[in-house]
Image 1 (tube, helix red, strand yellow):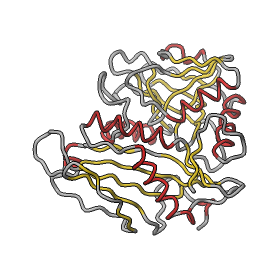
Image 2: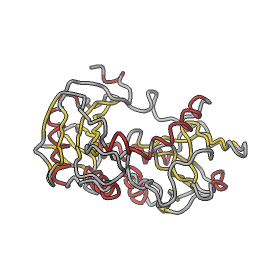
Image 3: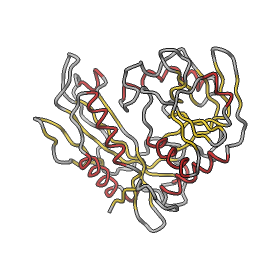
Length: 335
């Protein structure tokens, strides 16, 4: 496999994935297969009513040959919250970790080597399998988890992207499900994302659905801003609690920065030194330009990546790859 040519996408390997099924009040034993398809009833609640949740996490090999998963328990807890909101059976910490570790062991040959521009990505998915024609809670579900090697977001290295503020489409509703990682959150953003991409923009900044005055998220990622010695990120009950953002907040605090969670008004975007999106895939996506479709205002942060952003990016990457001390216990070793 040519690791440096991989895209950040599903790259088939023929490796094993795992499935668990919830019926009669309990989860089945794990079932391992190389089959990349799943038989789903035509009337399943997942297909018809979007009762589905997912997670994304990465696996790293260190210079000593150890294999680590980055903060898997945080993903387990986030999926459990999604389960409660969708009234689906929960996946326990133990079952989630067992699934992650066993799939990693069975796909260890597909963990990209150190120094390559690729990483292993794990995708756990929980979805309702119960056939039903009415919208209701279900008592049958499947939990599946697969691994795939992925390339980096930036083939030429981390660099600033252009984004657009588009208020014509809301990402999530107030008091909705924006703070949990469910599949139904992502479909409403497809149209505005496609419009942005066709116009040459890398992502859409979504504003709050109630007033459209405050920044919510950037595409499917959290939004962060730096000003002086401050690390600022939105405080909103409709924003997904990003594990990457939480990690960067801790690293910023370790660097002596003041970490602030508060509403970020669109009107103050021009006052920041630099802004970015952050998430599992790219870690940090610096933003070079913001264009507001409503006002026609263009805000430029320059063509170079902020040194502070680069430091945060490399600090997290060094911990994940075992090049720096894991002071906060974020790495879970697969033995």
